[in-house]
Length: 307
Image (cartoon, rainbow, N blue to C red):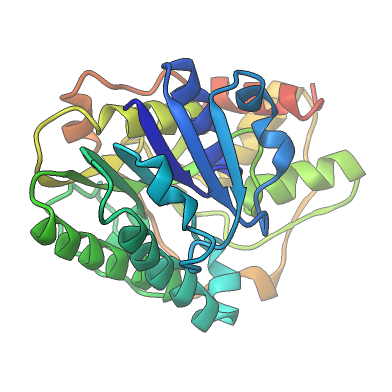
């Protein structure tokens, strides 16, 4: 990976990925419209001289025109509308960005000397279930966000038929947490309220989620690149499910003080459930998460100045 295109590279996972890629010695081109990403997330990578930044929309052929001259040999397509409630309220935008934006990026690199294309999909394509999902499980997307990611996977399958010599990776990422989060998920809301000293209002607390620290996700994404030119899927998760109420208890134990939490009916979902990965396939590459939940939460709390 000498010349790497990262779409959405100023976002949560994307910016940590860019840091890792420049540390590995790659030259990185980031395309981000800054609707959710932040310029300061790229300060460290920018100081290396290995980063080129384009403010642009991945749906725009004109904005993507510099990609042709950059001639990447690898692509990590991270740009997407992520937040599920937002996607449900704005389905047209979610499908437009998450599906047609991917198609536009594929068109922009059609003449590039690609060896690898990694598409950031989601564990949400499996739907909810009590047991960990392997990559062989049938997709059961149930809402706009997961449907858009499943559609993106179909676009990538078509891409691989057109370019069979490119390693084409479907990276099914589970629930990520850590510094630089840009969407208002449970942990973000919790820490925001902690800083403000206000009541933490949440929805369902019983569902188990496969929570994985952001730098472990990045290491997993990089690990998927190794291998031959084939279409392949990898789960990026820990394989462990933790209920939201147990995450809150862990935060209380780390900080040594109780949280003021109230469940709010309007935030509770009837169609909720557990979502856990089977990451065995990715672990066969030699990758494994370095952060357990308590260690990751401690790192996040320290970064937020809450310890």
